[in-house]
Image (spheres, rainbow, N blue to C red):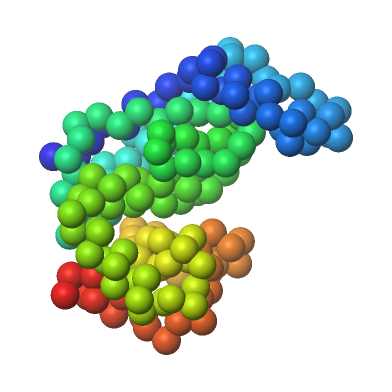
Length: 189
């Protein structure tokens, strides 16, 4: 079963991001205002078109490469204008780049499938905490995610897109001697 991703705008939720001092400062420096709900809803229409083309293959590939099953039938994805993308609640910010949107959503959905399969994932967290004890928790928490994202990117897209993700920092170039394949294989041991 592949979940349905429902893109939603919640005024109350978006307002929390809009009211953050860092958001106000950012907009003030740029001489901008937080957009109207109408503008954000028009972005959601664009997202739906992009996701209609890409979504099922991304969801299928996440499940296939991670060997984890989707447990939820529907996942709400909240859309905000400015702020940090989150995996729970799934939150994506507006972007003009369809590739950036898909890549960000892919990473957040990898987090989602990991949390939906917590029993398997908690063993991995114990291993990674020991194996990579010198790394920060945030790094430890993303080693498998980035290995999966690399494989998904190469499977669905191409090396150039992967290089762009690494260059942008979306997929860090860890000083890790293990390949993505080795990391994913270790996850299943």
